[in-house]
Length: 317
Image (cartoon, rainbow, N blue to C red; front, top):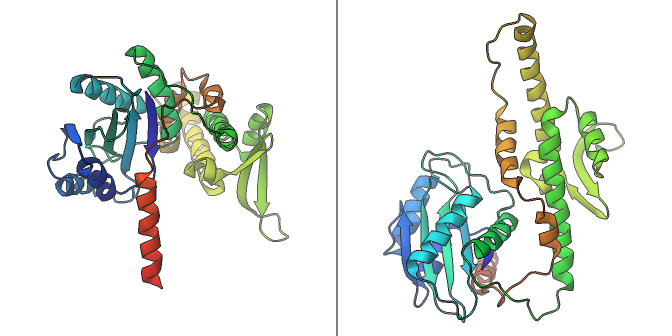
């Protein structure tokens, strides 16, 4: 089984595609109506409005099975729900739809990244985590493993190495940041892990304007690794951590057993995300390996996105 996560889709676009495809069958819905894509989209959007600042709230992926592999609808729903749970997409709306328009059986899952309580669900590295989880579920459910693509993979290999190194930087920062008192501390800790920190300065001054992380031949802006790793956000996170530590010290000195303040929200979020990385020691190696796939993923969605962008640009003219 293979996982493919589609980024940048709206609920309207994703729901129309998965429901209106010829031969599509909605297998299970949670919190949305499945008989009409417009109503399904409306239900997703209504919950998204509980957290309007979460602009990219639409999660859309496909799970593809080996050509000729036959599974019951119940089995596919079970696999899809386990996939969402392992990704951390829980307590939220979703729709699971079966497509039979290609040589291989596949599912499409649309889910809301704003949960039922109006809280945002982390969307960091879902594509790569999904790939790892799909491999785990393939073994767990004794599914047929995919075969290698019969195409030139050079460019794909370069892309995977780049993204794998970006993920390694992400993981190292997550682990190091809660223990740093300053950006200098972060520099030292990352340097010990083979990651160089580089700054962008304002004009000819010493005022820092941006931050980048370099590992080997790959260099990424902090915000490209993750939005919370921009220079400003890192400085805020470190300052907040220091403030909390200062508040805890008097209590320790007094010998009280009162529990100190909670960890800053930034670090709570980071540590929650870090738990996802546990048990994934081989993720980087897996990403660099040639991808296994019975067939290239469907291009209809990508082509439709291009057509929409072209129409919008023509209207502006």
